[in-house]
Image (cartoon, rainbow, N blue to C red; front, side, top):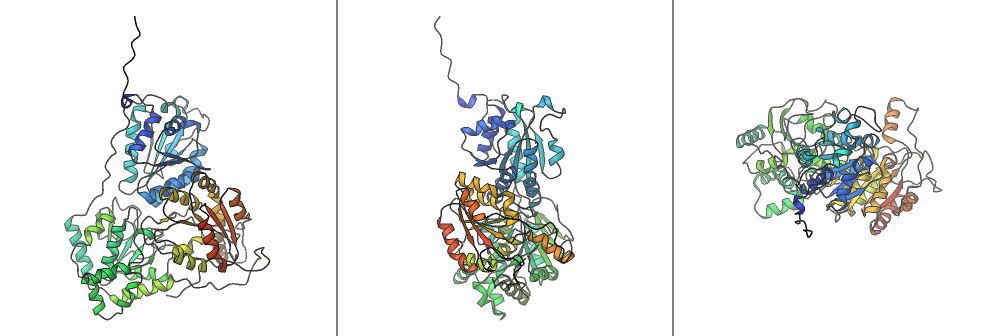
Length: 597
């Protein structure tokens, strides 16, 4: 009997392994990259990625992979994805999960696990996934049923993006990954709710604005768009309502909308704005300035911002609760009339709440600005805040203290970071992405660099060091057409500086400014206040960062004077490579010069 050729099988009907189905579902969810350190515990997922449209970004440390995934989630709104192996790999990634949880940023962490049959026997690298991550993730789930692979991924993306965003941790046992998962190439992604406010809620808020003399808006959270940010700032400026940003949420709204307002006036959109100008407060001259944005709250904030929080008779929080850092340790603004607009519950909020609106803040703004309102605000208060903010954010040379150590260049010249920021304000493109980790070096970009586009800042709201360089890698890969600059302290940089190798290997391009003052400056500053003359455990011994960068195939240059910075920055940009500018800073300089406002 002649052999009969088998009927061809439709690829869509072929049974996929659970590992391959995870990849197929990530493709359906729109994931474009996964970041990770490979491990034997998830080989089948790696095999599925071989022929996938998803790029696999191989990092040099699981902490770097986690921070890259977090940065992608912050910048795109779609959860960034990291993949690590069990035990040590999961431990190294923990810092990014904690950051994503406290920062309310969507992220997925896949963790390879031991075979199911080996559980509870102290097998190699065994650990309790839920015990480790249960207190710092929105959800922790282990895939024990291979046929549930697509559903688990879809639900995890949904949970990470819904309500208050955050990280989801998915355990994937190595033996389960190789089992048949069914003939499906995935399931339809789950719709993410974006709740809108009811008309009655909007009208109630309008009435509150109309009763208030000193209303204040505080913005924060994720998923702000160019439209929502610009509309809020136009509306707030027309009605003389100051706008502050939550700690490290400075890119939620554009800081400078003078040109847009001039266009509005030319086209007859004067309404509330001409009301303020007619009262002779001199605001017409300020139109080319900052609009209604008057700064940020939290560490490094100006005193004028704290006064606004204290003096407001109505505070409206859009996308951010009144939390610890924002309120100077639960001490400011707790008793003013308060409206809270959040997509989930009031997690992390302290103090009074007079109206709670469960809504997606950027969408809420687009509804609010269409409502008719005629608040009789204190224009002098508003104008004073604008002027104070302008003074606080104008770079002025930092007075040089007596040199404490030589920079090794044969003289005692150092780079003044304030002068560096002045150059960056002139040179950076309007949509440039700024990244940094934690430390005193972050005080300069947070204070002096304006944000004019959404998704233009990645910095840890929980104060995690080592985030700036991985975030720069992810930002360059996510937005290859945008300029990316990272400001790093010498301590922060070397916590994940090895990811410069990832940048070289995957074509990420950015300029990293490494501020070298030879110490953990934030802690040294605390020591000088509490234990003067007794520094302990904060000194650093640093390499030649420029030579180090060149050894990776990146661009590297050392700058010992701020007068040389502009040309060095130009050479770094023109290199077309990931670049490191090693800036030698006076060890005695801890922060920008104090400005009385």
